[in-house]
Amino acid sequence: MHMRDDLYALDASGAEFRRACGGNTHPDGESCVTLARIGAGAWALGDSKRPGGEPLRFTTAELNAAGIDPARFGLSA
Image (cartoon, rainbow, N blue to C red; front, side):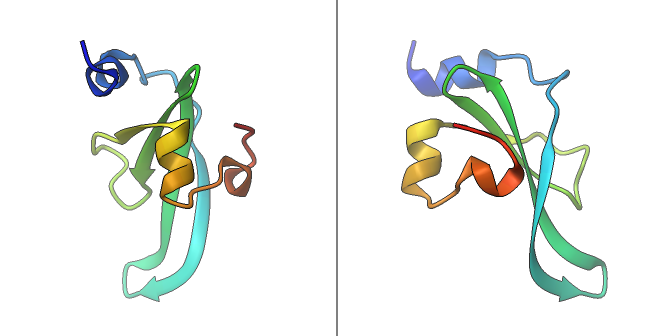
């Protein structure tokens, strides 16, 4: 099983998502991203405007490569 498959096998239903907003506004409100730790080195990234949508899953290394710092969400890597 690949790490990607392992990420989507993790249960994120009880995860505590934190929000970070980027100042981009439009008629529906400010654009925000949500992030939660779902396991050791595993994260779920969602869209605050689509709270019922399935969040994308990433490793810590993938978040770092994308320039996403969990500290921006009040979380530690």
